Image 1: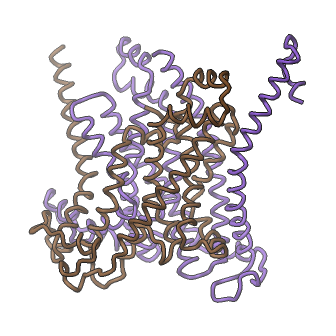
Image 2: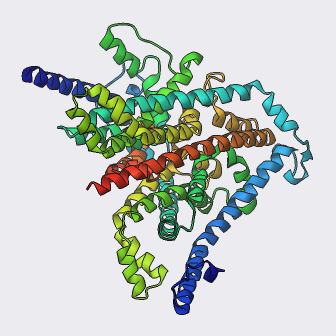
Amino acid sequence: MAMTKSRRSRVTTIVRYVVLTLWATVAFFPIYWMVATSFKIDTQWFAWPPVYFPDPPTLANYLNVWFGAEQYAQTQYAISSQKPLISLMNSTIIATTSTFLAVAFGSVIAYGVSRYRILSEVRMFQLLMLRMIPPIVVVAPLSLYYSALGLLDSMFGLILIYFLTTLPYAVWMTKSFIDEVPREIEQAAEILGASRWRTVFEIVLPLIRSGLVATFLFILILTWSEYLLALIITKTQVTTLPVELSKYQGSTEGRVYGRQAALAVGITIPLMIVGLVIRKHLARGFSFGMVRR
Amino acid sequence: MTSVAAPAADASPRASTRESSRRRAIQRFRWSILAPLIALIAVVLLPVMFLQLYFSLHQWTVYLGTWWDAEWVGLDLFKDVLSDPRFGWAVVRSLVFATGSTIGCFVIGFALAYLMYKPFRGQAVYYIIFILPMLTVPVVVAYTAEMLLYQSGPLNDLITRLSGIEFKPQWLTNPNIALPTVMLLEIWNWTPFSFIIMLAGLAAVPKEPIEAAQILGASKWRIFWEVQLPLLRPVIFLALVLRFLEAMAEFPKTWALLQGGPGTATETLPVYIFLTTWQYFEISKGAAMSYIVMMMMIVIVLAAIGLLRREKRSLDAMYAQSKADG
């Protein structure tokens, strides 16, 4: 009896590892392929049979795409502008600013909701509509409105709309952290005569520091990878990295996989680092704080 | 008003004035937070809504003059959209895409979470690998897919080598499989979402009912169906509803990879609205279409919110329970 049971659990263990490893391969292979392609010389991007390991590995794609170094590239594929670095700067400024604003404002709303119910439960759920209605349905009138205001192709325009569309995440996620803080400390502060604003900024928000960082990084993931709004609202002055990447598609007659891959790796690495740092908080973020670990 | 509402049976007048001034302070606090929020939403969203309605009722394209001189056409544009078979097919495609990819993400994500929710060697490594697809920018997913899926590309080559059978589907150019291809990409990209939600859910399920069932000699299978699954219901709804809504809005992968093609094979609602507005420059038709889709999505989202509200209550109750148990 004991024998069969332990054998069965060993079989279960083996099956588990086989299934998990299988999916790990599926999950990882495309990422590997992107990285591998970014190190390939141009004859191997689209070769038959496919080249699985870059041989010889080259940095030409990175040097050309990111630094416009033409001497490393054959002229046919050379991308001479240094737009990706400008886009990197744009993306960084837009994503961090809008995320900071969303978390700053969102956490204050969250405090009010958690402690004083300044928004009823229904209103809190209605706030989610800012996120759940697909942006495509408002993007055309938004771009006309922005062009009337002169906000088209400006960082401020994109920051504003990112701020609004990520605010529900900020409110809900920080609220889930604030809900976990016992009220006694605030009540003590109130008795000692601290104003509500002082209580928020000097007691509650410092207590959920790590939660605020997690929320900030989580929303950074969303804004960093956003594509549709950036595509419509930015034209030439301000482009973000995802939009910049899409410009390499179809713009030339030849396939520029290696260059695209080098750009794609550069876009993805910061996102993966951020995501792995807050990996324990991702479920909370994506579920608006409803599911916790 | 507030002093009348206060339960002032035994309270002294001083206490009740303090109470009412506290309430006024809370109201001030409340509106100093909400006023900017409401103002912001009003300044950004109301004009957008107005413009959308305006363009739905007036015929205008960028070739015509100033948009405020556009011709009033009443509901013609709505009739135009609703009688457009291409729009109907886009609705169908979007629903098929969202439903299919939601189910795919959920089944795989749940299975992986079930295999992983108890500690084992290598758990952390698998977790990290499994969440990587979610941490890849959607546009990057599209271009990487192109590098993988061309007919003599690495995916077909690998499958041919491993199985020994010639495997050469035209993932991106065959109109019959282009939409399933995009669905597979969506599943690859967002299975981590269902996975992490279900993993967190499985970890939060109270232990006692499962242990009780084990003592009673129930099989793993029965424990799963009759104990764990009912307890997981709120988390399951959450994983399905949120994923479905996001899939309905999916644009970057579909657009960057195929722009709705081949033909109209991957023309989902966001893609068709985008094409109408920014490729055919039929701003007004695009606006009418957006309006219809927005109404449709509001109905869906309100239903989803109703569901989420109900399930969040049972979820909160579950967390309160597990907190009380220590």
